Amino acid sequence: MLKGRHLIEPSGFTIDELEEVFRLADSIIETSEKYSEKCRNKLLASLFYEPSTRTKFSFDAAMLRLGGQVIGFSDPNTSSAAKGETLKDTIITISNYVDIAVVRHPLEGTAKLMAKHALVPIINAGDGGHQHPTQTLTDLLTIRHYKKTLNNHCIAVCGDLKFGRTIHSLVKAMHRYEGTKFIFISPEELKMPTYIKEILDPNSYTETNNLDEGIKKADILYMSRVQRERFVSEYEYMVLKDYFILTLEKMKLAKENMIVMHPLPRVNEIADEVDSDPRAVYFQQAKFGMYVRMALILKLLGLE
View 1 (cartoon, rainbow, N blue to C red):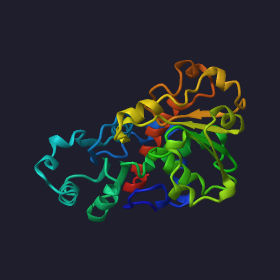
View 2: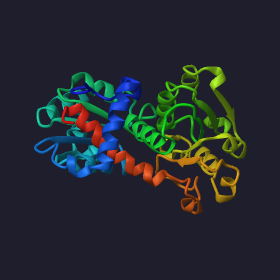
View 3: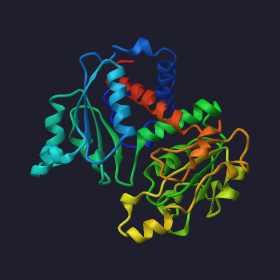
View 4: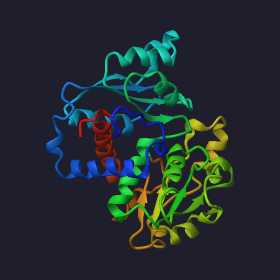
């Protein structure tokens, strides 16, 4: 049972517990009307200390589609944080009003701190460059849907591997599945951090700065943007932002059954022309994000 639990990072759930969430998400996809009143009279606190479109909208949509309601903020300047209130006091206070809370914050470890003091389940919607577990659940559900299994895949992750919290979470989650291989594609300045590589079998990954070579072997290509908000130097960002651009010409190098994923938003790392390729699943991936968050809310509230 996941009732009353927090989701701070993907490894907080076992593989079997993740599969519980995915099976419920499958059911919601097939018969969504059956779940339309499951969260009636329940409140979700949406605490976004950092800008977001997909994550915030998908959580809000998930709760509303379950018959619940959402309160919260998307600008910390409109909350008591602007007056100096501590995160501890914020979450204890808000716990008195709601049944479950989702938090995004630019500082690593924030969600873990809030979970320590919360009286309701806390879902981490991204903390700095650290973790983004519900995006990882979205990614796993997408892979599971298109590939029918989470085992024995070669996953090429491309772009900002240094700061990309979605990529860090994905690698940490997928390395638990049998037969997973990784290809890390990035410029030297944005290589995968050592602390991520240390948890992997050295034989399970290769590193390159060549997208053309990496794409040939991949079952899944996971693209990411270079994140302007993580750079101190504007010059360094401008130098690196267009390092990799996926085009239809490059897609000719890929397997016929490879899928292209992206956590979004994209800037220009995937050309618009790729959207017409049936292997491009990133917009459907975003929709799966709503379904998996619906399943997660139900599980943490014990309402499935």
